[in-house]
Image (cartoon, rainbow, N blue to C red; front, side, top):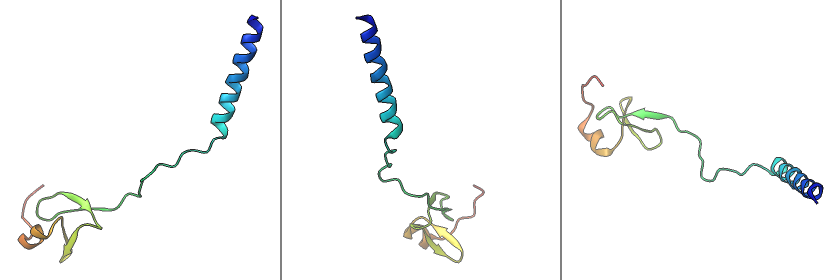
Length: 75
């Protein structure tokens, strides 16, 4: 009886390993490529370039900061 249980356990382990090895890796849902980040010339916050506003080769995180302009700080 002990040998039968060992064989059943061995077969189950091999089947589990085989299924794990042949199953395709699940795709990560909602993962996007990293976007280049730019620093706001007013407050220094980094934001994706696609969402930032530019003026005179400077980037801003919002319309308010764009209107206020760049600050002179050593951040």
